Length: 173
Image 1 (spheres, helix red, strand yellow):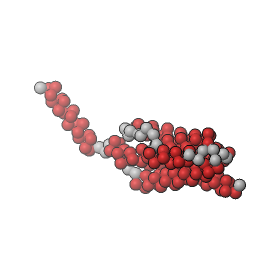
Image 2 (image 1 turned 45 degrees about the horizontal axis):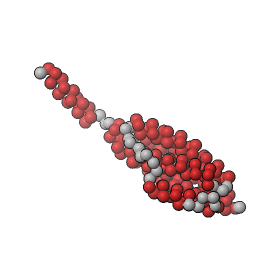
Image 3 (image 1 turned 60 degrees about the vertical axis):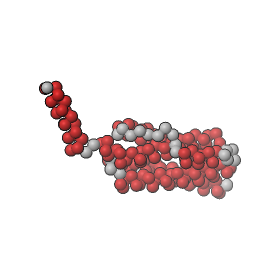
Image 4 (image 1 turned 30 degrees about the vertical axis):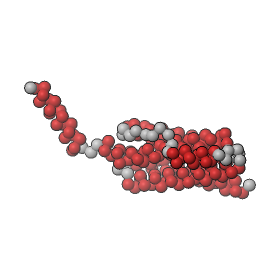
């Protein structure tokens, strides 16, 4: 009888704790789509950056590609750590649309059209990522996720500058 009361009391306390205290898990639910999308974006950028080492024809694109790999690996390590802390399951790879975009660029491998297609695709992806980051910073509910978005923003913005500068360099030559 005492054991049954203890179990009932523990169950009641757990239920009350879940109702009365804001849960990190509840906040993560609202921000989970952001973490998942940013993780997929990081994976896509890493794959695209690695691809330049094999398929780009200009030093500029290869350099920008290597920078994307380095920086997006760092950003993704932070995303994975935060997602683990908040119990958010992340996708295993880039989205189908991201994979299709990379495949379309890869189809031009070894040509100057590859470099331009790669730069345009990456610029579009970084513009979309900045919009997603800005949205999270404005409407996100979890302070840690918003802080991670705020920390990632200058890195993604710098990448966009590098992509545009490289495109201008190619256009001049």
